[in-house]
Image (cartoon, rainbow, N blue to C red):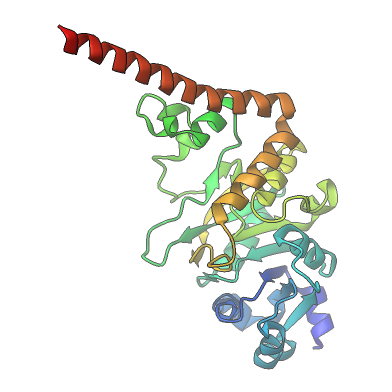
Length: 303
């Protein structure tokens, strides 16, 4: 069977975005090719690397190592994660897409189990795998859409105060063991399955999100269109986290920038300005408490 024919009959397109990831991308790719479901049927998964103009020899290395077992989409420059995924979406055609970070690896049965879940749940447009850290602990890989109060608590230290924790974003997930199938608002994109029909329905990723929050925006749009997002623990992956980011840029600064874009897009400028005003106001409150405390302390010393 030719490589082109294999891509046509594949159940799932596995997409790995690469940007100077030569030293670690084999972890992800080797784990896909080692899956029992892929070993039994090499046509089960079509593997695509969407390369964002890597300058470390990644493309040449991948062609030499994997040959025709994978396809490389050359983007020519660093377009960001969302745009790189979109280029790969346009170059593939399987019923399901599975996004896998270059610093993540799949455990046996990961693709077969999540494809089976999607087959059995036609209204599920997005499905997230259970993701582990390398020390064996489970990552908090799912979340809830922000409310105004949740966004305030997330952006301030108040969300960690016992009196407020039950109102913070993701509060209902805090005591959950990630051990059962569950309908959720969103899942992170490190190991994430998407139904192709969902992309056709609501469009691909919003490329204004260069990095981070593109999957949150996508899940929000999916929910608004009546699609479901689920957590599927039978599909498992291990994820290092921030693999491509190390030494390249500030992860937190990028996350905050994308979060602001998301808030403005889905909630509007007034919502966002009110949030900023409240965050600034807490410092005014702190200052007021400090002034009162100092004044009270001085009065006590004069007695």
